[in-house]
Length: 132
Image (cartoon, rainbow, N blue to C red; front, side):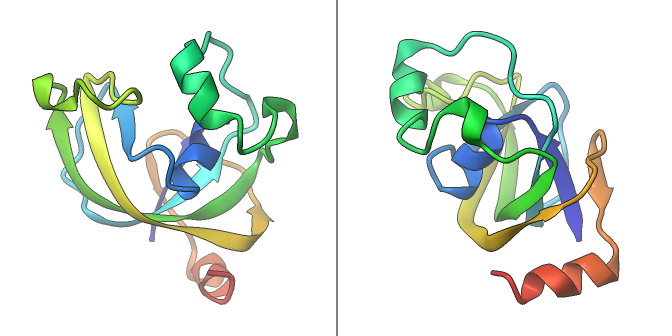
């Protein structure tokens, strides 16, 4: 199964269903289940007031878990950012990965992340299948 490492608070926003677009500088043809891994380093850049209001009902940034598998979403498409994304405050592009059907694990699974799309071992996949 494929996984991707994403900085907090974006990783939690995805698995809770708040964020339905993941912005990447690269395109992908992959479609299917995608495990969301929260990276060790949190987002270090500013967050607009609008986004802050949407995100932090989850919990304060310092309390979000890092270095763990958080859940699974379905990656249903990848598009170049265009005017159709303008009403989504999370969509900035250049590539917008469309995410649906978020499923959070009952218990986050500690693991190191990687760059790009990466594969999870069958052992890990079987472990988290009992967690969803």
